[in-house]
Amino acid sequence: MSSAPAQSLVAVPFLSEAPDLVAATLEEARAHPAVGLVLGIHGDDGTVNAAVGELVGGSHGIDLVPQRRIGSFRPGKGDAINTGFRFFLDETGFQRLHFYDADIRSFDRSWIERAESALDKGFQAVRHFYPRSPTDGMITWMVTRPGFGLLWPESVLPWIEQPMSGEVAFERDSVAVLTSDPVVVAQSDWGIDTAITHRSVAHGLSIYETFAPQGKDHQLYGSLEELRTMLLECLHTLQRLRGASAPRPIRHFAESAGSDEAPAAIQRIAYDVDATRALALQPWSPDQLELLHQHFDQDLKDLHAATWLAVLGVLLEKFDASSPDWQEVAFRLWMRRVLTYSEAIEGLTYTEAMSQLRALVHRAATR
Ligand SMILES: Nc1nc2c(ncn2[C@@H]2O[C@H](COP(=O)(O)OP(=O)(O)O)[C@@H](O)[C@H]2O)c(=O)[nH]1
Ligand SMILES: [Mg+2]
Image 1 (cartoon, protein in one colour):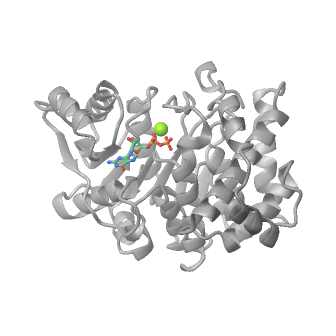
Image 2 (tube, rainbow, N blue to C red):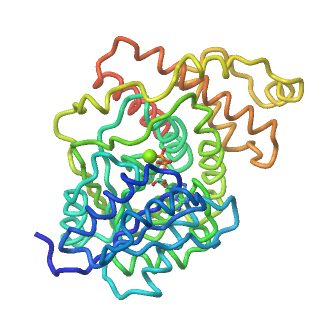
């Protein structure tokens, strides 16, 4: 059981999610006895905001606030998270702050319970991880974790299960540490989760990773085009983090995932392979070809693991986030890598596919 009652604030960022799912998430969090207040932090989708307001308007213990403009990149999820950090510190005296995405159909109070128990053990930060489709998490598996491995092989960073998890919880002091870090404050876009993971380790916060066996059954994708902005922002965030203070050795515990199986709802293919292939195979422009010739001497047709790590190394060095040609090059190379991997795991079991992903991280960190 959780220690004291009503010591926690739960914050849920939402943009364009199904209003009934957002409302159900807010109500479910509100019902947990450790939770004193639930904060829905919304973006600028007026229709969604109005509908969620209708659904939870009268509910005691649920507040809705707009995200504030806090950071210096594209105003996105990072501004919402930083709004939650500020609200927690400035407007409340709660001891703990949890974040949950608003689009988790498998969300229930057990997520809160697990985080509370881990904080009860004395950890300063909690991160949830969960079984995912072997074709979901393609930024995490192809960029963030191997990127951490290439850049900080001696640290715990590549071994954090889901460095882009939106399901995290912190003690009050940890929130104060993170919000005093300019890298976190500036990261207004999709890079926020990567930044929080890296900065938590750099500040020496202890981390407990708790496993949610039901998995995160959330909105998946059409073609990988939908992940373009997220990919580019996460890549750019890794580059920025190289200029910040380095990760430190920390106290870290990750629960065992137990049996390496995933619920059937989680196992489906997470994106539209045919639509993605059509995109990835479009011809390069002359300027893009020039970039490719200048910076990559790999055979870019078949992006198997070793080639991809070499390509990722070049991207981490040379990618220019402000150049449309670099954006296209990085995006398409990543899509090709995801397609190569997706073809390679056809016919493999869930466990076999997941071990290919783990092997890539291992290879990056031990190069
Ligand atoms: N307030 C706010 N919430 C956002 C924004 N972008 C994403 N979110 C929320 O952040 C969470 C994660 O986003 P999602 O699209 O599910 O990302 P994914 O799960 O990584 O594919 C969801 O609850 C979104 O509604 C934003 O710009 N503002
Ligand atoms: Mg989602």
